[in-house]
Image (cartoon, rainbow, N blue to C red; front, side, top):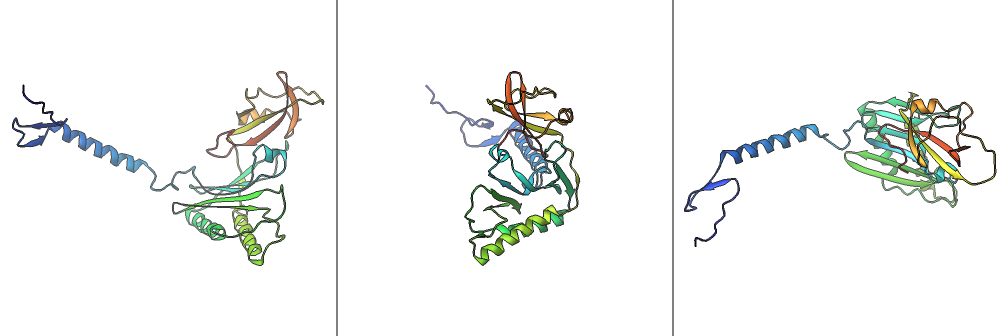
Amino acid sequence: MRPWNPQPIGLASTLDNSTVTEVPYARRMRRLAAIALALMALAAPATAEAAPTRVVASAWVEGTYSLPGVLGYRTLHFTLYADGRLLTTGEDDAKGVTTYEVARISPRESRRMRELLVRATDGVDFGDVPVADVGYTRTRVILDGRLTTSMTNALQMDTGLTPAQTQARERLRRSIQRFEEVPADPFIPLAYEVRRVLRDEPGIQLEWPGPSLPAGACGQISRADYLAFPDSYRQGGRYTWRGQQFDLWTRPLMPGERACRS
């Protein structure tokens, strides 16, 4: 019996195995693979910061002792996107729901402001103010592919801090203010998040008079649905609907954001 002598897939050889040559099919497949890889490289962003809806800098407050804080809602200072859009918090609307404002800054200005934020936060000791339930100011900035984050409790307070820590907090406050002071226009959200916090307490039984709500405790509604909320609605108002009693909380979604992720 002739011993088993398998040949490599895609290759042809002489009977004595003295030479091995590629068949045309294998060469074509290699070329197609190379072309596909080149096209993928062209289609992909040059850097992680290049995608338009990618957040490249942000600052917010979380963990405050309040019902919105317990729900995971953040108090936004600003969010900066790779395409230069800058979102900041506006005045609450007539229903008590947060609104945003939007501006657009140049790539040069975006980089300059991010550089200042990195200098104000990278490896900086902000100290720890001996107070509870005030919340933490958090920052996140991407510069040249590097992520820098910080977390500072009670940023507006300086009790029990060293002079260096006090100065560091002032630099951070000023860095955040630079983003908030950019002139902006009202932002029109495309969708809103709604949360129903179930209650089982005696109280006014007011039937929800607005449009249908998402089936779960948290869901997403369109801008048209939000505009159909009754004029009597107020943020955190208590209602009954489909046999359940709940407090209803609403917030606008930012670009690229999905509801109910907190």
